[in-house]
Length: 428
Image 1 (cartoon, rainbow, N blue to C red):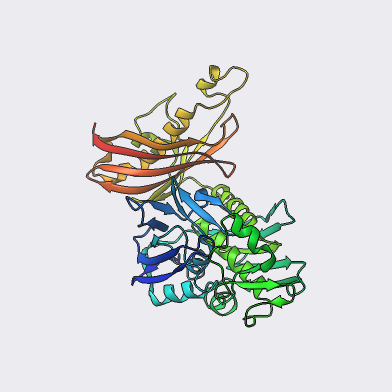
Image 2 (cartoon, one colour):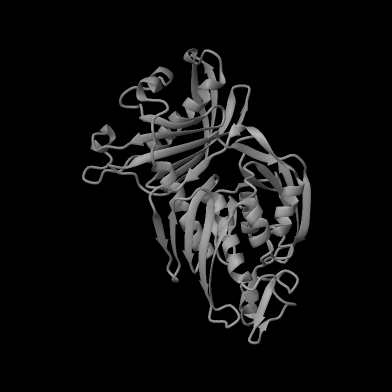
């Protein structure tokens, strides 16, 4: 079976509306993007048009919607547009946004799906990243949510919801997230809420843009709108939300997801578990230590990369560092309580990045990578003996032998460190 190709859109297209929570007017412009870009929101209403990648490590809130941030720049309620992108398997797109929140439109997924379809999705000359769930995995939430993900030839979601309101009750259904099925069975399903909650939500600054035009509202007597689009529209919308939140993995997903009482928080937790399994399952070296030593000048005790497991020339690299108690730095950091120094975690990240950069020039054996600056460095958890650090680096910009990279370090699927790195390639 031939590998799937990455996809973008051939035409620009614009949607307008208001945010369901912020109530603020917003314009969303879909633009094509180069292979390897991923889904990238850009707040063009803010100084410098800051970018917010649509990735799990940028999720900052899951209260009645999934919101992303990169520093002070935020993008609220991304799940509907992400679901459409996931269903259409559009890997690379820039979404220019004015306002803090994606326009809610009619409260469903269909306007985004139709807009992206009209933008003419096209294949690109690059292999798409696909994650296939192997061993079954499960997650459990703190409010009765539970999820199981098993093997599947595509993304299918089977879900159960359970609400005390008589109009909803307990519902179960199973749906394919393939584009054709998504368009007819899930895309028209609208978000919903309860009239009794409106005052409390408004006091919290939520649902300020909600109305009968964009939300199915229920009171004690039932649905206040002019009917439902499906008898189980509430369930179908929850399934669409799962599709959207799972799209933040940044890869196409082959899995059967079974969800009980799904929520955005639970969806994101499941997405992180699937992403972690994808990082650690079946990792084989594409570059071994002998080859690494040909390209990197580092030697004991400063060579901190053991192998490279994924490599896309000029785009992305994944490297491994196995941390053992025999590391020399543990003698003094700290006796009786060994913790890998944070600066060495970033050094190892930089060495993996150096391997990505060296193929950008002719005669790499005559060149060396010097790092110029580090920004947005954060350590999220300690690294101790027995841990395996998985470093993921993406090339953000490269020009005249100067580059910018984004680096993430994971241990057991959890983010351990992150940084933006800038480097220059020069003659030895």
